[in-house]
Image (tube, rainbow, N blue to C red):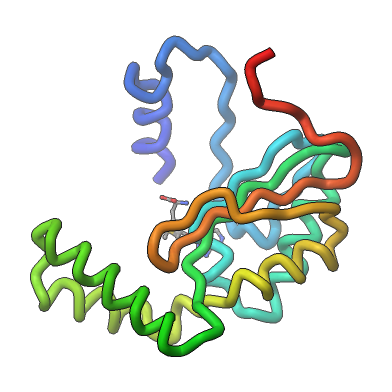
Length: 163
Ligand SMILES: C[S@@+](CC[C@H](N)C(=O)[O-])C[C@H]1O[C@@H](n2cnc3c(N)ncnc32)[C@H](O)[C@@H]1O
């Protein structure tokens, strides 16, 4: 099951001259021990957990980060304003149509995710991050209703800017 992942990591495209050691772990993220991490990336995955399980996962990540460590959390979100939410969904579907997805493919994907992917608002995510102990968070990327949030554990955040 992890073979494809190993192949991808060993490929020149992903390696890009980088020799950082990678250990692949397969399992339920709710049971994943995290310690001494500088950065955790969780892309479009929290949204598939039951809502009452999400706080425990975010707390585990927070507790496993070093001071000043960061979490990059990407999620599909829902807008508080139902009209804006409908507009964002329409714009996204239009974007997919322009990229040659058929109406049937779009409808099937939507039906498959209904009640499986339970999106929350950005405010709900940020409030959960704060409750877990993250000192700061911000949306650093958004397209339609897909966002990426960075959250920093207390302490001085690392700077990624060129000196
Ligand atoms: C939308 S995909 C995102 C995959 C990847 N992070 C990316 O950005 O391409 C959601 C992934 O979450 C995984 N997932 C859902 N619940 C999980 C859980 N409890 N533990 C580990 N992975 C889970 C699914 O298997 C799926 O691969």
